[in-house]
Image (cartoon, rainbow over all chains, first blue to last red; front, side, top):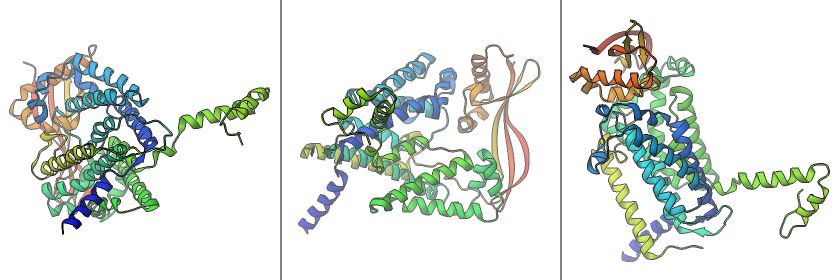
Length: 310
Length: 145
């Protein structure tokens, strides 16, 4: 009995700390911090407009009341915005992963509290917040480094868990707030009226389609944890399905869930993406192919350890 | 391979279990107020198959008499934030004066607002599908004294 418990615990521990190449962590880190910078200016730009919203409309969240965090002023909002933008871009380089990582996490968390303290809370970024909290714990990770890391494995695993919790617990919330009647309710019709695209208006009138879609959403959310038992290309196919689901919600009700989509890349072998290495080798090839570059080409091909350009 | 020390693993496992427990408690008993551990209740409310859908907007009337639709861009307030605080505006319509102030701050060259109102457009729904019919209802109104 005791040995089977130990075996179970060992299996869970093995799963939670399943090592990944440091290159994957490095790529995920760069992607997440670049996304954080992009979130400030592209995906969630409205947070900044809270600078000019009178303090009387500030309705602090539980955490804002407990800590207690100050009522946002234009100076506070603009300072956090610029500091976060600069530090997130610096963190994307992979330098000072702990100092920059923790600072970015704390600033982004405060940024989100400012975002959600005016009467509306969004539910699209739990995975991103977990990624930002977990990444600094890994420490240094270089692009291209194939060394396996348990710390890196844990950081990616908890981000994955957070992403899947966002689906699975959303089904639970539907049961809690809407009851089983949610499946046959007019929730999607309502969403389409409020934020629907022309494409959504087109499909909204098909009898039974929105109810079928609601049934499909709950089934997908409840089954989402099965991603952890899938392996190899089946797992990637399932992740592809998750992304296509969000593509569909963008096309119909203009909800992007962008921070969640960024966090979901924790399931992908990101180390295979080497844009800078590709650019470098591409530019070398280009330089080699350019007329009059023969000498340079020889230099590149002849460099120790360099591979000859095809 | 870079392995973790037993202590490093134990701390991380504890943080994972605690985080999951708080998130689960938030889902079962929490509210949006408990962000980021509140329930993932996006689109979780069920409205009846024939229940009309509200489309809330904020409108102002400026000193020239023109009606201005107040958006996130010109007032800094999102529609969902307006709906989230609707009961507070209804209890105290003078709070809409803050909206007029936010608009003036963001649009210094524009004529000031002498009236701000929250209007709900109720869209009719039948069998969980929109019918295309609607009616407007002004739920809160503030006029400059």
